[in-house]
Length: 120
Image (cartoon, rainbow, N blue to C red; front, top):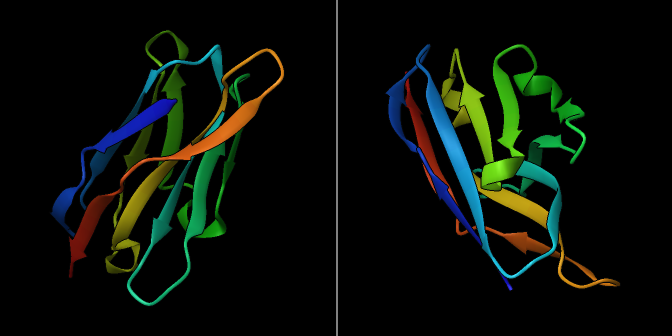
């Protein structure tokens, strides 16, 4: 079992910055790809950015140039640096991780989410 705990959300004015963290703990061999998703009220959950175990990154067009995803493999922690925040970035942000939990099995886990609110 893997637990993902997000932190760093909050209320910020437009143009401001926040840094989200997602720490993985529990019983697993390794954490493979990790990603950040967000869900605004009444909308579907969408990918914001993801990062492979090798460090390759991918971003949604709406956040390119403003958000940076990174990870510290030694700490099993992923980060999302969010700059130049806009009101449309307001959402609950979720962490997702794909973990190798046995020699032959991989599982996907989600965190509980952290609220990001950007005021205009």
